[in-house]
Length: 505
Ligand code: UN1
Image (cartoon, rainbow, N blue to C red; front, side, top):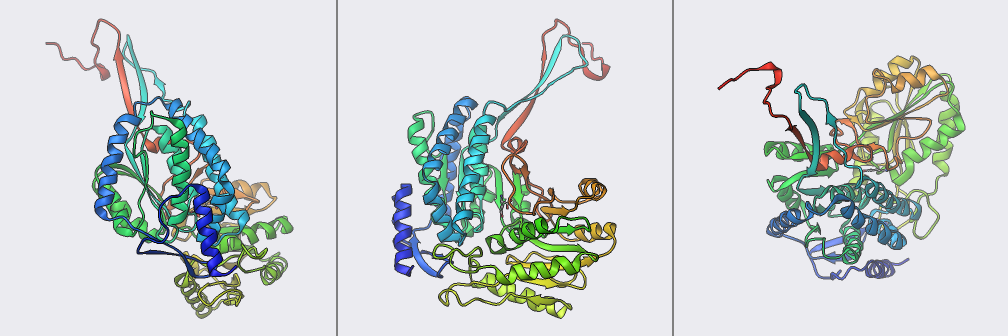
């Protein structure tokens, strides 16, 4: 596919999604990592535009919070229907902008559909408790109310699913959303917004103007959301570096935040592991999405008794994996997002060598134009957990280390900043339960006999420590998008005070 045809595929796909904005009008050049060439240029918003959007959203909140939650769920149900209709087109946009394989692009859209289904059910389950009171003739309960405007900041590697996790929940919870996507992937955002607008048109008048808005442009737009007192909740996905800026700014104004930041995810491969299954799980976890998932497997602790079985098998799988443009070939591993990502990978591999590591793979692949960055995924055998192993490098590098003592492996596993996802590969009940126990993995996601990536909707998604502590999408994550009121009602003719206090006037 030549550049021109990639640009024209982009145009046709955007049009099919219903995007009417000009793709030639502006100063933001959108580059596809598949070829490294421009596919569109978009007009950008200013910080003043962001402020105006926040004002509109605030107005929308006044109306939307009064629409009954199951009716709000109807909007999300229609959105899920529209997503199903546009699944192929949105999946293609994810591939064009983020470089994912068609299967992974479609998988990301499926995550959006799944969260819509989840949120529709939730719209009839925004439950509060009834609590026993110590006072006779009283009743105590809690009520959940809409919170306010939600600002959503997302990263290039998942250009749409994290927005959907947040907006599907926010919308059923009664909150308008403003989305600031990565500057690297604004087209997918505009396409998603157009699909949501089709659902809004079908939904009718209950939906106020400005219920969902998109900001296209640079960090000043994120800054406008983060510092605005009118934005009740900021949900930000991105690097730990970004989270260190966003978190304190939101906290300073007593706003709420959900932070989903970097991970340094690991697997522990125990002596009793099913080796074939482990190999497949690690291959997808470490090489899938070219190592550019926040949940990517970056470290592997392998028991010394099976090290000489699993590591050669892994090296073989790595050597044979197909790298290339996944829209043109059947390649499983697509490109890195840009040159900076490639430079970061080279730097990490050099540091690993200096720290005594043996690198297999990692070379740039000549499978696209010079402006695209395709690499052979790398396995690095490390003598210990030092140097670049302790940080997240957003590239397909798997650091492999040998262990002899299980407890020591858990210590090492937890001895990094990130706390997102983790896996154990074992058929030993004691090892498995220990890994899942209070002295086991300290991550928000701890898996057994599956890889670290590819979480499904339904479970809460997020992690601890430098991952930021936020939880999104499943379980009771909805509570972050609502405010809780505790109500005590006196239906008696007396006024007993709590704690037996008397105050007779
Ligand atoms: C991310 O990389 O920011 O668990 C999200 C997974 C996907 C989500 C990843 N469901 O790998």
